[in-house]
Length: 104
Image (cartoon, rainbow, N blue to C red; front, side, top):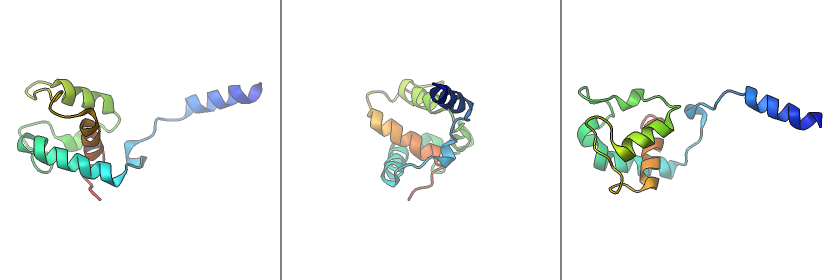
């Protein structure tokens, strides 16, 4: 009975994994790059850092839910992409942004 309690306690003590340490499938990063180029680059710039808008290179890597929410529902001047992008495209877009545009 002590073993399960120990496992739970040790799991709770672990820090959340850093996105940089996660392994994303190369095909998903590539898909995200394609989605970005087609839909996001006109406003956010080819390198994700248009000076007039939010610098996506600085987007917190531990805030995937916030990112997906913003893309799906829009935020400030950015229109909502729900209905225009499929959920898996938005997830791929997050992968691309989270990896710092490092395409395979």
